[in-house]
Figure (cartoon, rainbow, N blue to C red):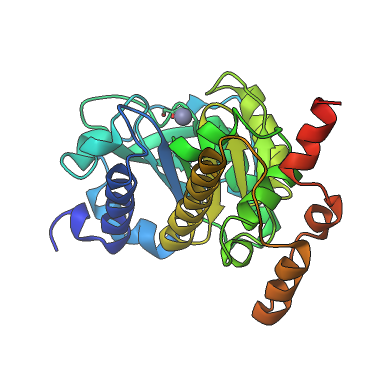
Amino acid sequence: MNNIFGVRIMDDYIRMCEDGVRQGWHERNGGNLTYRMRPEEVEECRPYFRKIPGEWVAMGVQADNLKGEYFISTGSGMFLANVSHEPQNSICIVEINEAGDSYRIVWGLENGGKPTSEFPTHFMNHSIRKEKTKGANRVIYHAHTPNVIALTFVLPLKAEVFTRMLWKSATECCVVFPGGVGVVPWMVPGGADIARATCKEMEKYDAAIWAFHGLFVSGPSFDIAFGLMHTIEKAAQITCIALSCTGGKPLRQTITDDNIRQIGKEFGVTLNEDVLNYGRDYIDEYADDFK
Ligand code: 2HA
Ligand code: ZN
C-alpha cells in the first residue's frame, strides 16, 4: 500500500459517501459525514499526513472528551458526489488540539477549504454520543432525506409523534431505533444554535430530524449509522405513501402499541417507554387541531 486510499478506514468512509449519493440524499453540497478515528487508524494514515499541518482554527465550541482526537470530515461546500472521484480535494483529516477547542487539517483538501459547515454540530454531538455510549459511537452523519423532510410539513414536530409513526410504518423499525427519533424545529444551519438544539436531542436519541432540512444520525460504525439513516428514511417513505393513498383520511389499520411492545420483548430491545406511554398518534394530534 503506498497511499492513504489503501487504508481500510478511508475506503470505508469514501464508500459511505457513495452509498448516500446513490440513495439521492446528497444533491449539490448537501449533507456531511464525520468519523472519530481509532488510534491505530490514525497511525495507519499518519505516513500520508501533510509535512506541515494547517493552522489551528478555533471552533467556537469546546469538548474535554475530544481533546487530541482525529476526525475524518467532508469539506465545507464540497459535493459528496465528488468524494470517490477526488477524495484528496473533497475530504480531510483534522486533529483536535489539547484544549479541545480548535482543529487543524493534517491531510486532504489539497486545493484548500475547511471541514464541513456543520462541524461545530458534529463535534458537539460526537462529544455527547461518545459520553453516552462510553466511547462506542464514532460516526455522525447528516443527509437530506426527502421523505423525512416531507413528513416535517405534515406531522406535528414532536419526537413522540414522529417516532410512533415511524415505528408503525414497518414491523422492524422499532428494533432498529428502539430509543426513538428526536425532532429539532426549523433553524439556521451551520451555527452554534442548531448545534446546541441537536445536542439536546442526541442526549436522548441517536437520531434527530431537522425540520424542513433533513436527518442527523450517530452510530458506532459506518454500517450502523448508514443503516439507521436508511431505515428512518424508508419508514418515512412508507408513511408518505400510505398517507398519500388515503388522501388525508386516517389509515384503516396500523401496528398497535401492543404489537410494538410484543416485538420489543421478542427481539430483546428496550423501547423508549416515554414514546409508548405518549399514547397519541398523529391523527389524535390532528383531532385537537380541528376541534
Ligand atoms: O453541508 O447539508 O446542513 C451542507 C449541509 C448543511
Ligand atoms: Zn444539510
